[in-house]
Image (cartoon, rainbow over all chains, first blue to last red; front, side):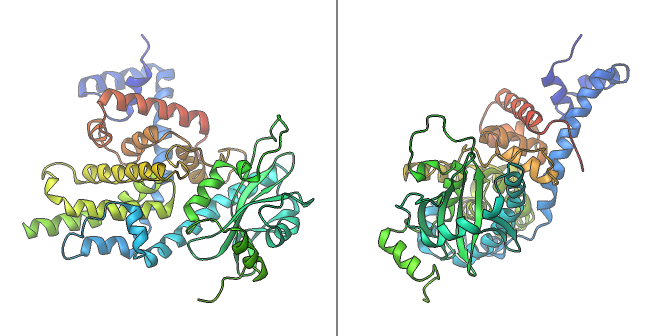
Length: 251
Length: 165
C-alpha cells in the first residue's frame, strides 16, 4: 500500500494523530523508499529553517521598538502612503536603507556571478567595494546620454532618470546585446552604482523596435518603483542633472 | 488592564524578530517590510482589545502583518504602480555554483506565489500548526494543506535535493 504525499507531509509536520503517526513510524523501518521520502521532506524543512534562521539574531530597528514603547496607542495610521507623505519616517527609512543595501549587495554578488557566467559582465560592469559599478560604455552612457535619445551607437539605452529616496540621481538602462541586461544605477561618490541588473532572456524574436522602458525587466521596474522619490525627471531636469555632473545640489 | 497591556507590549517586543523576518519574506523588500511591520504594530496597539487572551499572539500578529501588506498592495494597484505581489523577481538560478545556500533558498521562496510562500513560512519556518496557519491566512485547512504541498513541490523543483548547511 502506497502512502500519499500529503500524509507524508502531515507526518513530517507533526499533524497526524498519535496513532497514525506511530503506525507510519513503524513502517519506516521496513520500507526504505518510504523512509527516503520522509527524509527528503525533513531535509527540505531543515534547509528552509536554516535559510531563515540567521535573520532572528539581527538587531531590530529602534523605530520598531519605539512603536511598542509609545505611551498610548498611536493614532491609527493605516495607510502607508499617508505615512510616507508625512515624511516622519525619514530617519527610520535610513535604517531600512542600510539593510536594503546589505541585502542588495548580497543579491548583487549572485547577479554579478550570473552575468559573468552569461558572458555579459564584460567591461561594462565591475564589482567594486560598494557593489556593482558601471564602467566603460555603460558608465559613459549613464553620464552623457539623455533618456529620449535612443542608443546613439553606444549600445546603451537610458529608460528613465529619477531621484531615489536618498536624493541621488539614478537612471534605468538597457545594455543592448544578444542577451540584453537591464538595470538601474545611481550616482554615488562619483561612480554609477548598479543597484539592480538583470540579464534578459535572448532578445525578442520579433525583432521589432521597442521603447527602452518596455525592455526593462519587471524586477528592474519594481526596484525603480520601490526606490524612486516622486516622479521620473523630465527632460529639463535631466539636462540640469547632466550639467551638474549628476551631483546632488546642495540643500 | 494597563498591566495586561504592558505585558502584551513586552510579548510583542519579543516577537519583533520573527515578525520582521515574516514581513521581509512576504514583501521581498526590506524597507517595505519595516514600513509594513510598523503600520501593523500601530494597528495592533490601536485594537489590542480584539486580541483574545488564550489565543496565540504570534498568529494574531502574523495576520495583521499580512493583511497590512495585502492592503498596501491593493493601494499600489489602485495607484497604478508596478504590481509587487506576485511579480517574479530577478530569476537567479539556485544552483550554478551559487555559494550561499541561504540566498538560494530565499530566492526560490521569493519566486513562489504569495499564497504558497506564506503557507510555507508559517508552517515550516514559524512552526505554526496547520490550524493556526489556516486561521492566519483565513482559509480552510484543506486549502492550506494543498498550498503547502504545491509550495513544497515547487521548492523541490527549484532547489533540487541539494542541501548544504
